[in-house]
Length: 397
Image 1 (tube, rainbow, N blue to C red):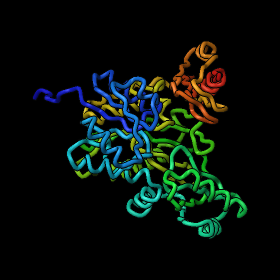
Image 2 (image 1 turned 90 degrees about the vertical axis):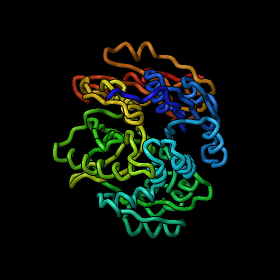
Image 3 (image 1 turned 30 degrees about the vertical axis):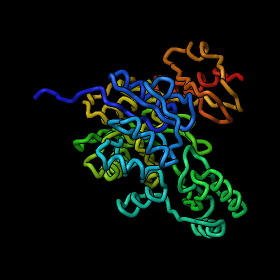
């Protein structure tokens, strides 16, 4: 029977950062129409979208009005800072939410995703507790032991996250968590026992609407300040360890894809700690993952193209991989309006390297402004090449 699906679809991207920009580019290569929304004008994805909408996505009324005016066929959340109950309202009206409104609601709340993973699915996680005051945080830290990790229940990009090494760190950690929480009336944190791990990985997991699941080669990554600094593929691990991680990723993404209007679809970034005594579930994002930027150079279809194909119910052929690859972030070192860049020619002079400059209209300390990509004969060489390329790019005022 002939394929009767009619394109283009109207896709509304909620959040227009660098990851969203790649989603827009992938969508437009397939002839789709994209409306990019964010809280500020000139965000990276807005620069390449068909339409742009400036709206506070935490303002439920404003978000509801913006979606109603855009009349999208599909809503694609790209950030966590969204009034997710509004997504559920539109999903109930028959508009697709990628992968589901339920996935967006659960994963943006660390308590909800931890309870799903640990209590409902029985996945191994770090030991944890919750606190609503600095005193409760101290009691939780005393019970879990030092060091431990403190995170707001709802935040993004490592905001409000810190490591409590001694009792003296408790009050500063509480204050930092409150400052980094998404909602200023949010007075709840999760306290996690510190996991001594050998490697932290992202397992990109693609689910289609007919229930099929596919995995991308595991991605190793390194974080600082709760934000990724470099990633590489393939991450070294045994077949048994990889199978355990895949089984866990399958279970958690299957649960998140069970929507009110049937099976959801899309790409997930599932994070794990690989410890000496096994695999520990960390977090999951129901969208392309920042560590997956390495797929822009490592394989025939990037994570963004995979996400879009799953969302649009398009075929996903066998992936071709191009060998060991790595990414390294290009960070701003201070506040800069309308940043300019030097060093691009030098960064691109080494064979097997590439760059993505995101085009953000302003910079602040540690803001990710671009990424260097590299291929190598092994991951060590690829990582070194990516780091050299990133270091050669300078951000000017």
